[in-house]
Image (cartoon, rainbow, N blue to C red):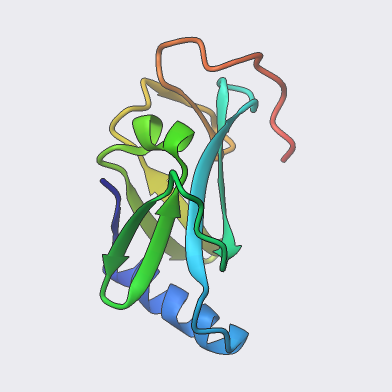
Length: 119
């Protein structure tokens, strides 16, 4: 379903070690909103929900709720480090259009009310 690139795995391992909680996983989700219809979200979570898909890759657990699974099928979580700053990004084959802010996308099925980028 979702893969995690080597740079993202390295960064996640470092961040998870700092949290000192072995039950944490990376929750990845989409929600209606953003300037293109959907917005990506990520955060550490130690609560597995009944409808979560759980993907394990190189010791990192990724949690995806049932709503988000459809929109993240085949996506890759990556980490980009650049002179202007680094961060996690999602390469999503389901996105037919993305916003210049890099945090929202359109899946072509009317994901909700569009709103301006917050950046």
